[in-house]
Amino acid sequence: KQGFEDPRSEGINAFVQIVVMLRKVAPRIKWDSMLENVASMSDTDRATITTELSLVHGQRQPYWFDAALVGPVIRPRLYWPSWTLVEGELEHKDSQRGYIRVSNPSSERIAVEQFLDPGVVKCSNKPFPTAIQWKRRTQPPANPRGIEDCDTATLEKWEASGYAMPPYQFKKKHGVVTQEGEERPPNADEREKLHGFKPGHTSPFPEHQRISFIGNSFHCIVVACFLASWA
Image (cartoon, rainbow, N blue to C red):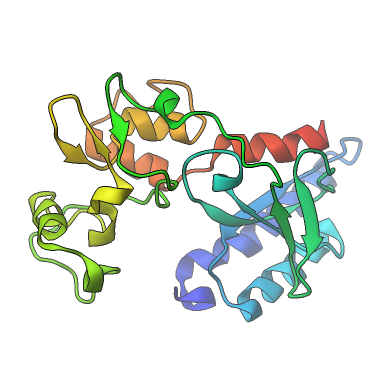
């Protein structure tokens, strides 16, 4: 949200410098690289990143790719690969806004039940919302996202979690129902599978930390789509 005012944005310049250094110390190797960032950034910030990466990628537009195109969870991201994404089952179109938008003309998807614990049922036919970090708080944050259209039951689940995620994440339509009738957001095991990780990938860690790991990670299937064009 802070754009280039966010100290983490310095990582983009560091990314470029690392690629430059690798090419310098090992010039016989053909180095490829890819940077990922949120799709919600401003046009100005997106253009700035594209310009910075042109030092190592040349004049290339990023790809806008939402994980919901290939699975049951939303995760719109911008990807700047140093190679061209080859068209196949997915289609690409220049948005005329400085990025290439990826789309999937097919509505066929893997059944969501394959990503959930046994007996667990999704509450709607819409994709799960973007996974985010789980951070418990003693007090609700100011102006939490999506609170304006949350019902009482949703707010109660939000409060019970310690305000760990924005309240909209606890809406029934964004969650699942267990065999015992409990309504909840997807757990860490389910989030791993939804993002293409092997089951138990983060299992040595506590539940809340595992959820945060997934919220701050890549969607492996989307990355695989890019790597399929690179291989």
